[in-house]
Length: 466
Image 1 (cartoon, rainbow, N blue to C red):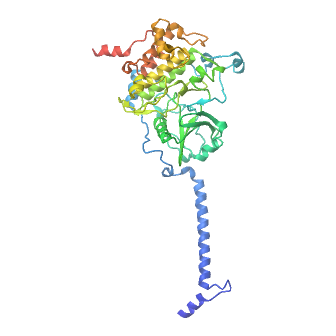
Image 2 (image 1 turned 45 degrees about the vertical axis):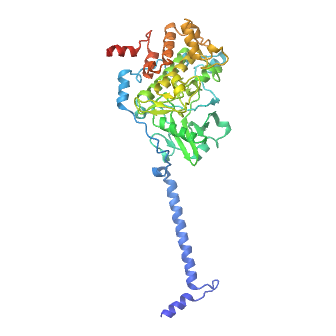
Image 3 (image 1 turned 90 degrees about the vertical axis):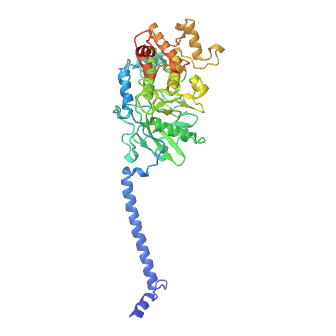
């Protein structure tokens, strides 16, 4: 019986003279391969259908150091009680563009409603971005405008933003076409892109510059990934694939403050005094929010006119947080390598690397003087004693020639009280003694105050203590 069984399996067949057991083994192998192939096809099909529910564990981790910025309720409440800066109604209506911009005649004929739709601008060393949200409590405040992320696959919503694949952003920017470049900075290039849902975005592609790009990437996500304020750019999401690091922002198509004051946007007209003050007030509110209403506080470190983007309603949007520093309550920091833009950097920070929120206050003061005068922070074409804008302003005020500092491009000059109030606010912000500078929450009140002279709150508090 056993010998008969062995003979049958070892018997040669007519197929290539193979033995029976060899032939059976081949057929079984082919059958198993077919089964495995069918299983693989089914799994692949199910995976493609369920890619919107990709487990979070499969999404790359940005960094172990990136943490959510949480709202410090005590700090937020303190700001609300003391200054009410986040509930003050805007002086200027969002649609009152005619009050904010003086058009040239040919521009008025094109846009009678005062709105400005600009084309492609040469943004240098800045980000294109925008944020639609409330003033007060960050991410807990409801978004009032349709999100550019609406309609995108649910693949990677991470609470505050979206994880984009490199392929997504290649398609959006036409493979990072040169035609879509809208800005170049020290660590990256900014492209205009269009997502599959039709939303226009700005894509910042960081260049690998000895690890600095990685650091800037972490800082930007850490500083503004979870923060929501209508005067701060909104970071929509990011991409991490291999060595690629990209940041995706909302897109702002109305230039920046530097361009409106000095350059590329001036052909559209000149900002009125009201337009400048609206932009500066929005900037001040955003800085007060970063300094006082969140924990850890965010010190921007690079406040300048080119980093203040402007939307179609002439609202300010602070951008470019690549140099930002996160500080705990009441803390300062010593920086071994001072970073910033010449002319805007606070003296104590430039000389010793000492950094806290008062460094931003100084930079804001320089921007305020820039908006009042229409002059650059540093102008080498001027005589030696007039090259520094801050020094020149102090000299003019000391000589009682303060009325001469107003930008000659202003068609309608501000009232005497409004000019004095703005100049006094600016001078207090650029005080060489950091301790004497006001907090940004005080700056907001000073800009909105109808009183002149502006009461010194520090002195009031000292008197109350005594």
